[in-house]
Length: 225
Image (cartoon, rainbow, N blue to C red; front, top):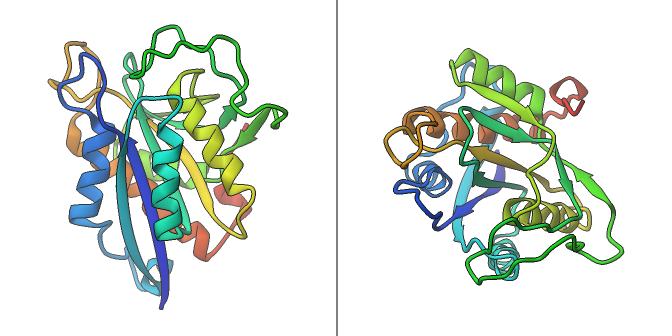
């Protein structure tokens, strides 16, 4: 049986959000695990999955260094970063991270970068390394509203996503990507969102399908365009 280490991270606080799914979903997955294999042919039978989580500050300067400390300590095979899209009604699988910081509001450190690169002379963008097609298919089976998102914006979520994929490009074999959750129904002052149980199930689907893809890669599981 193959040992696989998974890190799933989120953010520790968002303004006007009472219950933060990018904190609650990782915590639930660490506490409750990802469930049993679906049948005798499920690749999950061949893996012992260990999940670690870390809550990050909504900070351009400190989010990535905080995550990197956990990556160095755990040496993961899979890294799933999560964040919050305030106006969303569904779970968004992010396809692309762009090399741009352009904040419309200050971050937790009161930083307000405008039209600045995340990494000077870095690539313009990186594509996700998650099996989006397989994940979206799981969402459909589980009745989870979901969408494919072209990018994670230009605030801290995108900055973290870009630096994660920049780091991943230097590793022998690490799968990584970003999931944007909507607000939790009843957990914010906004009138959007999904039930927390649906969001936890979505996070579980993301981990399960990424583990399956890690063990048995298939081009059919990938969906970028």
